[in-house]
Each structure stands twice: as C-alpha cells, then as structure tokens.
Image (cartoon, rainbow, N blue to C red; front, side, top):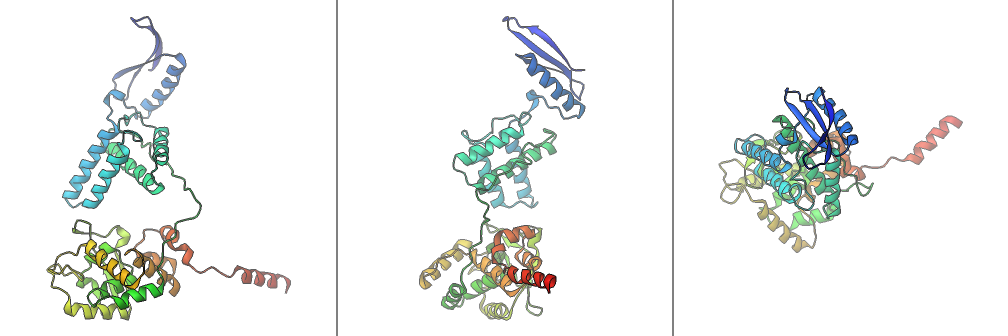
Length: 367
C-alpha cells in the first residue's frame, strides 16, 4: 500500500514522503517539498506498480548508456551477418555521437526511467532550433526509438517515450525527385566510352541503386526471359550482402537495349571470381567513388549536371510515362510502400481531365 506522511528533516525542513512497495515487493520512498507534488506522484506510482511498469531512478541507466548498449548489440549483428551493414552501424554511431549525446541539444545524461514524451519533444525542438534539417531530426528521433526499444527488450524500460513523436514538415509541398531530361541522358550515353556505356544504360533504364549495380551478378541477368533479378548489393565498404530491404528483392524487366548492351559488355567484361557484371578492373567489387569520378568527367564533356542517383529517377519517370501501374512501379523501384513511390514521383503521373469528366456528368444529368 502506498502512503504519504509528513517528515521533518534534521535540518528543520519539512518534507512529504511517499512510501510504497514496488511490483517486486521492495519498499521504496520519495521525498517532495509540497504535499501537492506528493499526491500527484502517489497516483502515478500506484498505477505504475499495478501495471508492473515501475522503475526506480536509482536502478535506471542514462540515455547515453542505453545508446552504448544498443550500438554494442548492433556491432555484434554486423560481425555475425545479421542484417547490419558497416555503413549502417557507422551512421547510427554518428547520430548518437553528434546529436543524441551532444552536450547542447542532446539528452544523453537523462535517465531513461525519467524520460517522457515532453523530453523527447523538447529534444526534437532543440535539434531544429540549432540548425538540424527535418530529415536529420527525423532520423535522430528514429535512432532514439531504436535505443529505447532495445532497453525495453533488456528489461530496463517499460515504455518508449519516443514513439508517436512527430516532426511536422515546414511545407505541405512534398519533395519532388529531380528527373533529368531525355536529351541529357541521351547525350551522356552517346558520349560515354564503350566500357562505361553499359553502366549508364542499365542504371537509366533499369533503375538500379548504385549498390545494386555494383553487386549485380551475371547469374541474375536472365537474357532469355528479359529480366534483371536483384538479389544482393555491395555496401560502402565493398561488402556483398542482402538488398536494402525486403522490397529490394525484385525482378526488373529489361528491354532490348539493356540486354544487348549487357551481351556486348559480357564479351569484354573483366573476369570476376564473384561473377559480377560490373567488377573492378581486377575482378573485385567496383568502388562507387570510381564510378562517380568517371560520371563527373563525362558530365563536363557534355555540359550537363546531375547526380548518379538521378539516373534511377529517370528510369522511374520512363515507367510512369509508359503507363505502368503504381503497384508495378513500386515493385520495379524496390520501394516498401506505394506512399513512398507517390511522395517521390506523384507529380510525374498524368493528371486526369477533370473538366471533361464533369462535362460528361452534366450531360448525363441534363441530357
């Protein structure tokens, strides 16, 4: 049973003490300067004990300690090949070090047992006020959620205060993926040397991510049925692994131009023990920085400017122009949801003729 009693400390100060027994049967107490504060805490602690979710501050770890435990767990996953790439682990470490544990905006010193939605909301606001972008802030909150979820799995926490925290967009206008013009892509392909041309054609017409292109194997190119099967990718550390997500496993239809370019390339492709379609000159995994360097020189030659990833946007724009359904485009692109596809490429879908449709409605009504 939880009770409140008045206490006079040796210093002469009057305090209100809440005494209770937690769900494990251990006696607990907490002092408050005002009876009102003690009453509020009494109601709260009774609910926590009844729901078996009470955590004593003295037994709680800090957010920084929880983050370290989570990163250690991620490192084990990385070393044992359990869906954790080195580049992902590095990114997580950076978010913890630069944002969550930042002495000015972070909350690394906060006990996870004391963490509330208000604390996480304030952390979000501090990130935005100190110049962090919406995307970065959203990622930092996501990492915090993962940290607290791991603490819950370890029995160190019962509720995740970061769940439900939202980052409101500064604009109602969604980000539109930049799509290069057909003239620019055609100029790049025509100006590229014979060894680099297949890279451009497969990327601009197949929509592969750079990591998927570097991890593509000849066994995943079906010349007979006309498909490119995405089954692996090469990360930033040149480690071969699974695609980016479950949706990354997909079959992309390939047209005659793509298949013919690959057939010609296969005759002079460097030998690779890994069976890669686009290996390094000695047969290993091609560094993406090398591809980017060649791409920049080619752009200077034809006087266009774009990112390598814009070739993927171009491929999606062609699928939309051809009239593929949203579901098909989502599948070909390897997106996890239709919402993701529409957020990036919704502006490219043709708009229906609403005026003509309304005229037909009126004609049906009035004759």
